[in-house]
Length: 424
Image (cartoon, rainbow, N blue to C red; front, side, top):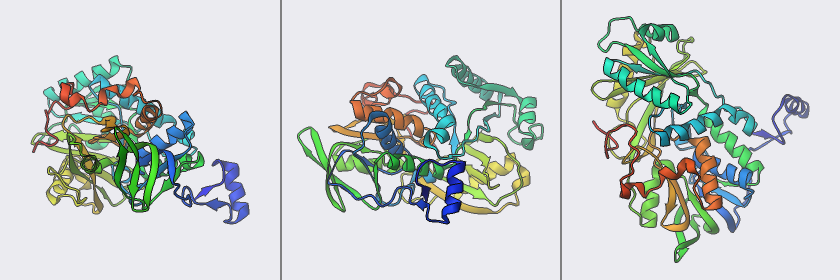
C-alpha cells in the first residue's frame, strides 16, 4: 500500500490522523488499453526500471508493463541482494559502476527506501595465484576510478574478525580484494519502489497478462498477442530474465543463451556476525558467498546447478556444497538450521555478459543474458535501455552488449572460461 503523494514524516502523521483511509494500492487498478507507445514485457527489476526511465527521462507516458504472473515474482525477488562493480573488463566495470552510483541515491530518487547497505564485498584469496588475479582486477578498477583495496591476511582479520584467517584450514586465507561501496539492497523493495514510481508517472502495470505472440508487418512489429487479446504498440521491450530463450523461439531467433538454475538459501536468524559480504571460491569449482540479512539470517549462494532447466527446484548436492563452504569459513554456524531454499532461472550467455539490442524487428528490443549480474545491474540497465528504446540509439555505456558480438568475435568473457555457461 502507498500514500497519495510523497513519503515523508508529515505523510506518516497525516496517515495516522486518517486512521487507515489515507493508504491506497501502489500500482494496481489500472485498466489495460488497446494501444501504447511502448509495451514492456516483464515486471521484474529491469522491466520496471526501463518503464520508469521512459516516463521520467523521456516523457513517454503511454507505457504498459505486462507481467505473466505477479510483479516481482521472478528473479528480482530470488537473488542474494548483492550489489558491486568489481569487474575486470572496462565494458563491464564502467557499466556496473554506473549502476552502483545509482544505487547510492536510488532511495532518494524513488522516494522509497530500497535499504542500500554499503557494507563492502570481500573476495577472498586462497593462494598467491589468487592474490595476483585479485590485484590485476583491483588495479583495473582503480585505473577506472573505482574503489578497490588489496588486503593481506592481517588486514582481512581486522576487517572480518569472524573469519579468523589465521586459523589452520584446508584452503588458507592469504588475503582479499575489498570494494567497500559494494554491499546489499533489499530486493523486493527495489521492485516495489520502481513500480510505485513508474505508476505515479502514468505507467500501466498489468499483472496476470501473459504475452503469447508478436504481430508484425514487414520489419516492424505492430503489437503483442496476450491472453487478454491483442494490444497495439509502437515499440516492444522484452525483459523476461530466465525466459529469454522462449522469447527467441517465439520470434524465430536462435539466441546464444542457456537457462540455468542459481539457488540460494537462508538460515535462522542469529546475533550480528557478518557486516560484510564474503565471496569464497575454492579449488574444485566450489563457491560460497555469504552475507547477513537485516533480520539476522545468513544468506548464502554458490555456483549454477549445472544443467539447463526452468523448474526453479535446485539440486540438493549444490545446496550441500554451498553449506559446506560456508561452514568451512565459519565453523561456528554449523549447528544453524536452514529456513528456506529457492532458485532463480538465469539467462546464461556464451561469454557471461548481457545482451541489450534489437531482436528481429526494428522496434523490438531485448534486455537479457544477465547471468549472475542481473540484480546489481538494474539501475544502470533501466536508464540506458530506456534511452535506447526512446531514441533508437544505444548509449555508449551499453554499445558493447549488442548481440552481433557473437558473430564478430568481440566477446566480453569476464571469467575467461570460454563459451561455456557452466564448467563442472
